[in-house]
Image 1 (cartoon, helix red, strand yellow):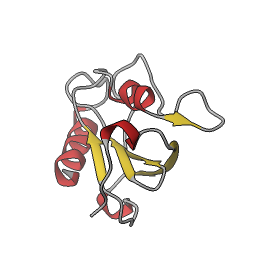
Image 2: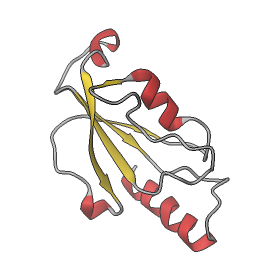
Image 3: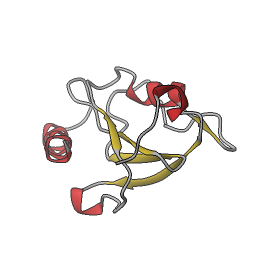
Length: 111
């Protein structure tokens, strides 16, 4: 089991690791995962950006004004200690109903 303190958890440089449109496409790693789930356009990606620092880029996670831009599970590795997972939002996404249902199933299955 990896032990870490909240103070030092996000001091390491974070990097984009992988996007996964399905559970079978999720990366195979041994790090603990912290998933960010919530309604569309609530600020999940903004929170990831606020908690992390990345090399060479100002912002790690894409932030959009239009709900429904995060459409896959997005994995971000923070140092060698933890994997952050940005999940698609639910509720306000401007997408066809069947697409939103696919995202909802993906979230539920992942969690």
